[in-house]
Image (cartoon, rainbow, N blue to C red; front, side, top):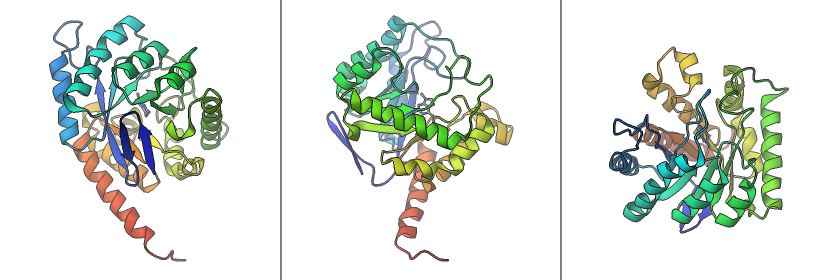
Length: 283
Ligand code: 9MG
């Protein structure tokens, strides 16, 4: 499967890695309110050297309980980074945002993908994505980042998330976004308990039948902390294990903070899948 993006063609016949570049003051701070552009660019270059195929640039935290950031502030954080990354590396850039104005400006600056944890549900987001020409990752989220972990509830989490994503795919196509530009993501940790997350991971292959590339992100998330008892900066092994399982269950793109280790894991899992596909099934 190939993903056609403005100026790029991403080959998804083997799974690949999306590196996370959070340009929030707590990530690349110069000690004050401002993002240190050179430090952010150096981190992106390191992820590309480590084998990332896509860099996901985000200026608003979507962590549980996170406060929203206003539009002007988000633009000021992400646009200079995208402009410099495009100019200096020519890499595939994804913009992680829920805001239509940020989507438009990021696409003008050279972003080839929109990664929206809100699945283009904000007013004007469908139109912004349709006009920008970029690919779009539609993620499932129950609630908002501020409230989503308060009491998430589902009938059957896999069926409910699948139904939501199928409806959003139809809404996007109705709004004029070609289906071959759309990706789906079940949204690990976004309005889900540990049991919900584990059910989604165990049954990830159910999303393959939707016919769109499958992106997943579990890197450093709370579900890994719940399973291991480890702090956020000690979850590398757990994240690599989760990424490996995701690839074995059909994920095409793994979103991660830890690119080098995840690239290795994805290569191993992908080779096992390829080798298994050449063999007759055993009973
Ligand atoms: C921005 N962001 C944080 N977690 C994410 C996830 O799991 N998937 C996608 N697509 N974006 C995410």
